[in-house]
Length: 287
Length: 318
Ligand SMILES: Cc1ncc(C[n+]2csc(CCOP(=O)(O)OP(=O)(O)O)c2C)c(N)n1
Ligand SMILES: [Mg+2]
Image (cartoon, rainbow over all chains, first blue to last red; front, side, top):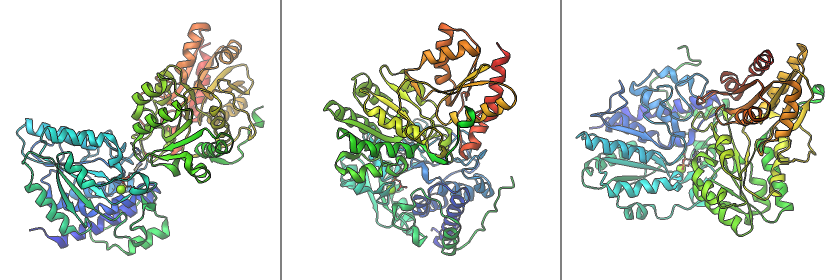
């Protein structure tokens, strides 16, 4: 049984880390990061069987790919608290000579990242490739990936969707961060996404729903249910509703904090809403 | 002449693009604009507010944007596409190649956040190969203006040029020093300072750094002929040859990979017509990284001191 209280404590600290990372370098993407914190916490601290000593080839372990690479602050915090690298290194986010690039990269050798992302639309294809390799290797562990909802406007997403159904890539759980927002505004004002569940279904995927991706217990439950559906000949997509900026009242539910860092005052305000549970890392980095 | 080159205050080249596009909106009814979920970054809001019916939001779908632009151009419109330089080129190279370049479509590919000075977003977004890719496409014009005023003027000028254009500009506030009322002539290099010891050919943000280098070199008694190559293609071969026949050596400076950039274009001209020492100031076969714009330029060999060292080396090789 999942220890929900423990997961909530992790999520609170991760949200603090997101605010502090973006504030310190005065750039980065807090909105989507805050909205996906509960998903990441559930995935890394409850769902996935993964090894923080980190092997690039991810044999015999579950593996995760972040396609919407701009929400790196949440992933970096989660990876650090999972033991992939020192939490103190979060203070280097987006600084020169850091392993914590603005968008996730393998180039500097950051443990936990297996392919660069940031140019949107490419992650599901890579995840499918790893899922195919796992099948060839008789490795029954799973592949997880996350995409943004705005990101679904990229054509490559649908090339990947068609492929995965055709090739019965049923060891893949793809989650869509369905926050309804992107840079220029709500998805439906930019390019309407239409009937997403029907689209994925018609592409041959097993479609699952989560109405509140910011309820960590619900996230754990739906991911467990998704796991139970693997191996049935269909790739699985989880359409997960989240609220951009969740956990910080003035960032919540708007696209305005997609890619804007909080100033000192806003940071103080945000942190006052998030309990420090695991200890804040120090600035500047002493590494 | 160097004393007359004065920074009138920092403004971004992307703001120059936005201002130029807004001006075109009023004068050129055939100009239409497209954007892939980056209206704010590309500074397109003024055009959109004034002409909402001539703007098309395509969402995060750059390949589609290039195809739609080709269609709009086919039917007589003058489409300006707007997204980051990476997603304006590498992401959509074949769409541009087939539907725009090979098909002779009058599309203006307008690309912001080019190069290292994009800063903190890091190497995934910092394209340093774009000018090389675009100049290789037959029939494409490639323009990389140096400041706000010049970017605004270039934006306006390309509307009256019939043919596909790649217009490259950047993110950061940068010294604005060229004339506000300049007329932009595609393909015409601009002499910023006459000199006798070495020719420095700079493009984009590096023009200002070359100005600073030229000032310091002048203090050391070295006379620099400084030329702003805002048009990478067609290259002003005449201006290059005239200058190097006088100075007998050259430096190229660009915020781009050394392979395939401005320096290589100049090298082609020199090896064919006037073999002379040429030193490159460019990124040398590496990706960038996250950081502050100016710190990144310095780290990747694009510092004022790098231009100075290159100039001295070029002179020593005469
Ligand atoms: C190919 C590509 N085009 C454009 C961008 C610029 N960009 C970064 S994030 C983003 C919006 C993404 O929307 P969504 O996937 O909904 O993420 P959210 O804003 O919800 O975090 C855009 C357009 C990009 N990174 N990659
Ligand atoms: Mg979104």
